[in-house]
Image 1: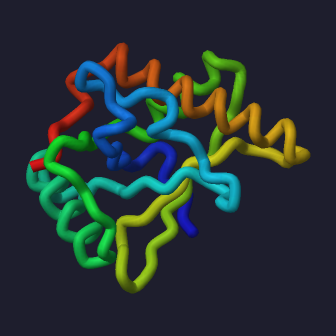
Image 2 (image 1 turned 90 degrees about the vertical axis):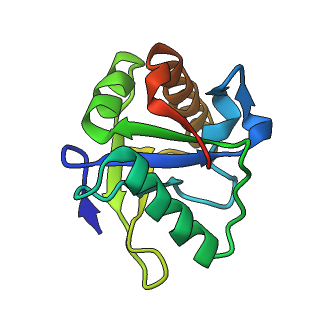
Length: 145
């Protein structure tokens, strides 16, 4: 795993049922109970945003991860999001977790150790902060095409 906190733009696919008025809501960023982090993708740095999103969509399709044309891609700079999280009183770690079928896979998770109850609360704060970041930066949300 590689720390990508200051190097990359990250992408999160948000299904239509997690989008309101074109902006992803908190539950688009909830960490599933059995998972240790929120899955995201590193936007390929050598491409522009639109072309990078085409690549991400192709990778997700190969993994048989369904995307809807009514869904959204949330795009954000890892460093800016980490700073935004600090404003919410929490620290997060961002790591690149490539695999053979997804060289762009990455993660966002609360930094530090937590008991189960504190972990749940921390991940919900993280989700709320990500959603607020996108409400403040609506130009970072792209329709899936």
